[in-house]
Image (cartoon, rainbow, N blue to C red; front, side):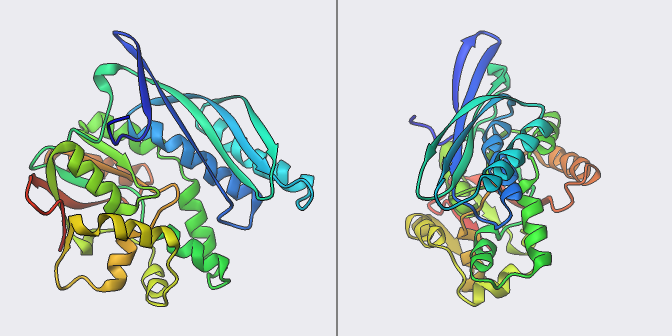
Length: 304
């Protein structure tokens, strides 16, 4: 509990440990089937971030029986099980309660060799940082709720959130990953600060290299920022320094709480180059090198 890793790990033997995680949330898109897929992909991501293989999952469902029809329930669960099947994970049960608001997610158990466990504490000075998905899901989801997102944008952001981090995890292991975390509720900067503090290093991020959904800058400038963004900023701002060239709305995007975001991967430069090529070849086309690791300084994360 003292660490800032993505999931809990329990050693069973010298060559086997289990990874356990749990995550669920309220709908962020109107399509019930897509919501089920996104929630499942998000829950599975913590195991992938730690270099593990998810094996089993259990549904967690809160459902307002009096206000939503059974077809909505069926679509959410179908989305979840389809994503679980895509991950080659076995759904072994779950639990549901009647609630006033729909919530859905998974409890996931995976395995990993203890010597090959990836944590947020292994980043080394000289490492490069690779981010595998674009930023902006929290701001865009706020725009969706306000009716200000186009159907095309909704489709693109939904597809990104529903995409498993499975292949990225497999490829980072092959490339010699030193440290990793997935980018979710604390935003890119929150998770970057956690990784830097766990590894006792500092990070430099290059704004121009960070992938974002093209529309998100305009939405941020309109003030379509979720509450989680401001909580992240309140908590982490003191540990982040911005160059004068970084505008306020881009700072907001970097603090934006993400849903089912990408992996932030640390590895030596030669490994990063190999990883990036393999990610692009595997269809993870938004992946990019966004910065580097440096020895620890008073500034935990510097954005230039």
